[in-house]
Length: 493
Image (cartoon, rainbow, N blue to C red):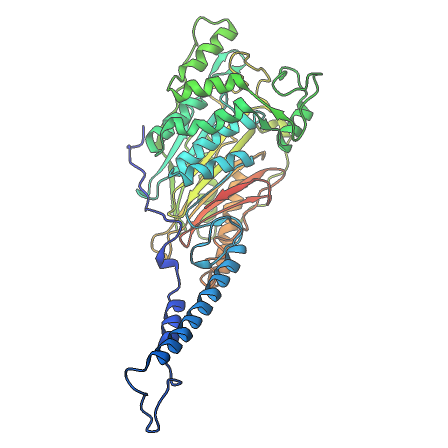
């Protein structure tokens, strides 16, 4: 069942609002400019003449002018100092600063700096969290072909702060294009999500990814490490030097064939990818069509608020079962990390998250199954095909989680968690949420004193070698962070 179409409404957010300015400075200036007890008086104690001579008027005017210039210089110096400590190129509203990862309007966190930058650009251009997230996902399809791409399978979880509803995105059951090669479904899935909830025009979201594919992108450390471990078989010339060795960190790579596919997608010719793939594989026509869906997210009401996640065949139902047991009175405390399993038992996945200060959140997770998927590069499209082909398999790598705080509280906070690279994502995510709730309870008495400097507590962790992204809307600010800290670049405004 598809979710009811609803517009995504947001308040008008300004970079500088008068209400953020302190009125104390203006009142102080006004009081200083009122004549004080030092005004000239006669021997009876009365003020000298109501209409002083020209020289007296001149002296008074010069004194007032000097005071005004002094106050203006002091005010400018104070604001310049606070701007220098804000950690942002834009003037901080009201002159107050935040720790890294806290923003007034919106933020995005992803595994690649160019994609976080692109998400921020879309937010500043008037886009919402769906625009920023979809644009960043398309960017990751270019710069991180080892974990995601147009051949990847997607799960998403979108919380609309305007309606209070959460919607799950799925690429549909994994299907085989030919034996061993997954049917590409990323473009139809992301396009469906954007059509229903995005704000900016669809072609606008593809400008940045297309430019990166055409003009080139720098190989970052995660991609270079994956190349070094994988080898270059099947990946040349896309990710190889002329001598066949893999590209290292800082090398420039281009993918003009992928750029051409993205340009056609911007013209709404999304079936072009399947047609080109059919030619590469010697097929008359694609054997199947992608079947992405949007449907209401699974819900679990609790004393802490409402929990949302993705339905089967993701690991969302397993996650809610774990949390339901743990959140009951007398339920088990946060369980220790699951025992480590072999890395090849967990599909390689890519994650990103966006949030705005009103509480709208988008979590996206995608997978090619193995590193670089099937390892088979389509020469006509520049796309690496996935080897996710089993329709009945549970997507154990996908269980994004959103907690909308109880409206009965003083603030209706929203928290989003999404993890990757762990052998038991559902157990790890439940452990992180329960740890977060436990930490929030112990620090509740201190949060009201520092609500502009710290948001929800950051006790959530991830087990093993995985990555977890946390986003939150708290105290009318957007918060982003990751475990391990510093693993994933973030941007906001």
